[in-house]
Length: 164
Image 1 (cartoon, one colour):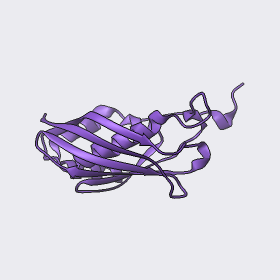
Image 2: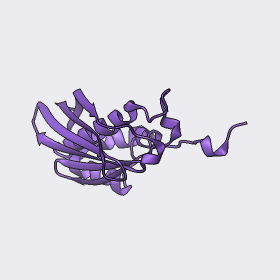
Image 3: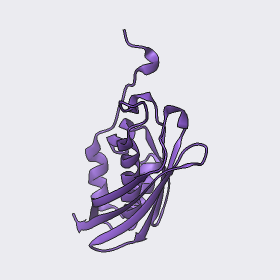
C-alpha cells in the first residue's frame, strides 16, 4: 500500500488556452497574466511544482518546491528539475521582451550545478534575466538559490525568436 505522504496528484488546465493567448498578446502582458492567474499556466509548472513569482521587462522569477518524488537514484533532486526550472525562467524572461505575434524556443542551455538539492533544501528561487534581447536570437542568464540563500545552479541560454 502506498504511503499517503509519498503520493502526488497533478491537475492542470487545457494547455491550448494559454498557448493560443500567447500568440496574440505582448509577452510581458502574457507572463504577468499567467502569474496573476488570469491565464492558466502550462502543465509543466504543476508537474514540477513551480510557481511564477514576478515578471518585468527582461526579468522573471519562479519558485519551486522540491520533494522526494524528484529524487534520482543517488538520493538527491534530479538535475533535470533544476535545468527545467532554469530553462523556464530564461524562456519566460525572453518572452517578456516579445511583441504580440512572436514566439521563442531554446536553442541551447548551459547549466552549472554548484551544490546538490534535497527535499530539505526548501523553496528554490530562480531568476532569469535577458542579457541581450533580439529579433532573431535572444540571450539570457539565470540563477537558482535554495531557501537558505545558497546558490545551487547557474545557466546561460540562447533562444531563437520567430513569428507565429
